[in-house]
Length: 430
Image 1: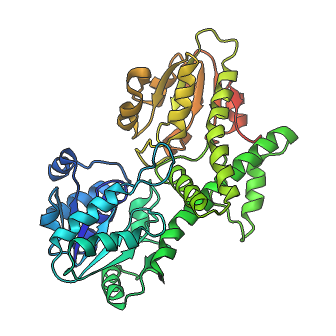
Image 2: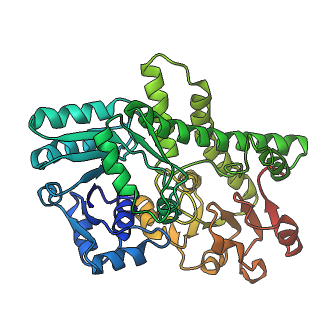
Image 3: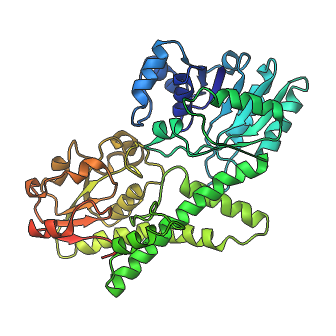
């Protein structure tokens, strides 16, 4: 099939590369000229495990191309996948649809023959109707269907998730559109489970799913706080909870709060949508507020650990919002560092992949290390903020710290081993 993907971010690029790998002629479009220039020069513009290899393979075999011109990609496409950003409005926190609507307007100008337009970006309920209205209004003779195709790619696992989806949700009641979708996903070695719903239901499924997971994360963080007060162990409690098939073990890992490009944005957008519809989503609203407070509380935990240490120096391990990605959007690490800087601490940070992304946000307000040992050298407190696998193999004995204090917010180290190596260990939920 001929596939056009609008947007080359953390959703669009893995999606485009994935469909190219499945044998489709895929063109990815982005308005950022520097990004397209880099991709056309063979330079991958974001980190996802396994993505770069597939990127180079499919550029070389001609299945994958990049352009800034919608006019080049749209006319021959069987399906156009909109995967542009939907950033939160700074004031209201509602999802900003300007890039979706701009894409729809440009697509309308170049449609030729029957085309399915699939909205993969996370959008509020009813946006598909507006996209349909924009395209139909601008090009009344266009032959098209608009479907909702919410994405469920986990950052850090996007390549795996693309080829091994636990479900594909498609919002459409049009048989003609379903035929195109069936052909697109028919190129999988094992056809995924496709759930067809109404367009509005599909739009809501994405928000409802992300909000549920965010609530689950915040819930276990609250249980961790309770464990600390009553003498229980949150990791034992989480294991016992997770063995219940109705609950499950995933997203029961306590930490410094949820972050990234999805959970903060989507919980706020869902809450805004509910308020607009005069519906109470008290659980989601509470999770949003609690997660914001969580990051401040974790910063206070680090500040308290530094009491009595003159000119305390802090080594930070992890800048990305989670392991496996270079994305620092809404990262708890960034927000915690910002709070520490307000309190005058000297910070040196290391992340295996997210250093450049963090520099774009933090600039020269902190130092950037080239390794764990480099970050820890002469530091007083070692703080773990991201769950990178690399950190689990650290030899604490080899760290040349001035004062041996660990604030482990990701359960990276064994408390008993750390203490045996002479460290003061401060964790979560114990």
